[in-house]
Length: 392
Image (cartoon, rainbow, N blue to C red; front, side, top):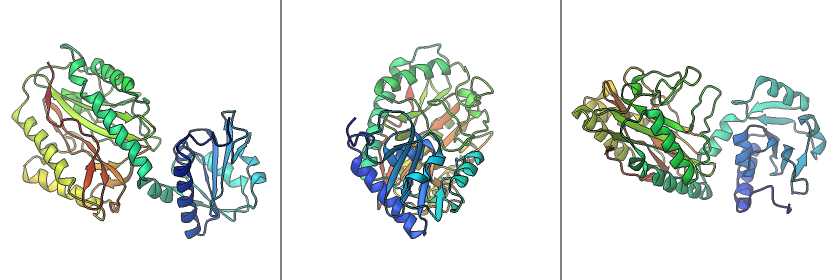
């Protein structure tokens, strides 16, 4: 191992800049240090996932307190520990005010880490980290654009893998194979303990109207009550739509893209809804930095109501209360494009916009694209064809 091997090659300047931004936020909030423990935060602050902790001070000092894997003992800023109680001995001074990211931290871990620093006032850094991660650096934008290209390449091959008589599950397996061959890592990171999904959501026909407990734009019954979302074994039949919303994680960052397919002709209502989704997507892409996130939701609802399609918008039997969301390392980052959102679009944020419809008897229609927020527009980075493609 060389002295810088803990930080992946090419990530050194990016990680240094992230640590500096975090330190500046800590200093502004009069917080002495931040201790991070979840995989997403560890990846964000080191460029890798490891078992342990990242400790960052308001002075910009960073320590990686590692339990596993072995092999980085000689690397800069890496200290091997068996338990978090060993961290204070590594520090130049003890924090008087310590921040933890508590939104995904179990109570038992919070209590233990609080006891590791008994003299420190413990505060929550969840909102601070969510805001910092929402604005993507040029480095991150390059990774996301790379995702968009590879995501598109896999989607463009979907018509070639369809065979008459397939079920949604059989098609999903082949789509997952395409994505993996393209380099997809096969993990769909979602924030929160009650959100689960395996490599995406493939919905055929009536299954698109099946309610799910998860807060996704579309549902599906799934194959088993232990994972009640997505493909259910529904046969792909003429007159039905096939909605493909599959994972675009090729490098630790994720693009989100939905495209729709059909077998034979589908109803005029379904075609109208699909074209409306494309129009809404293109209209919302005209907004830029400084726009309230809720304004995009309101504009989408206005267009849908004017078209007389509100009954089918963002679900039919069960509706989703948003039209888009931020994404990056996780699929549900800030900002949220929802009616009560207080988020304001910032240049460099990345958002997925997904105005979708469920047409009874036909299935789900609509498109989803990933955009980078620019000062006067949204730059689309998922560029597969948007029309509903016929599978033969």
